[in-house]
Length: 301
Image (cartoon, rainbow, N blue to C red):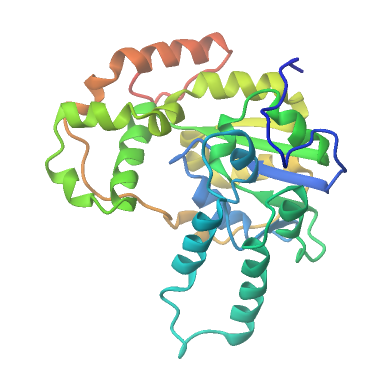
């Protein structure tokens, strides 16, 4: 474990009480199929997710991504219920969700708040939180995470860097209401957008992997490739269940095949792969130096 100390935060204490017997964190990278994995694992009897797939608690404490500021949480709740159709809604389910979101809006956002997000778990072994921004925690910040659980499991997924970045840019423009810009993006605009820190840092696989390996024990961390997952999803899910030491179940084929959180269908411009070829070749070399055999589908090797 690195001697680096956690970032300073008034709500964060690395020596607080254990909150979880078993905590399962999916920490990214963005646009590598973590939402698909979440949608599949919500049907597992040993894994509990809160109504929000991404809580971003530890990233809120230790990074510049303040997704749990009061205004941000209120906006999230507004989005959640803005399209509610009273004629088709399940009143009991809505009441349960509203009680959970009442806790979600409560203050302060501290360890006790995070524990409340899982208070409605009913017998499942793992509390699960798939917050991609957690992959940006520093080594010392992980000390806080580890001291809050007796059994921590973390998964980090990588995908062909070119394909992942293009998907990320499309998703960002869609989410920010600028999807029409995809029809006229120039190479200069792509470069400027991709190099924004909150986008580019998700391209830095080797940095994230090195931090996770230094911060976590070998049996706490699983690194995976998007391409391997989708080539043999049943086999890969069986291996994930072994990693978590949970029941082996049969997943519905329709759920395995369903695409979720899909970015716009806009095709990648011909110039796009060449814009980042030097950076991605270096990244691939760094991953090989870390001992990885990269998928053949990767175009930047």
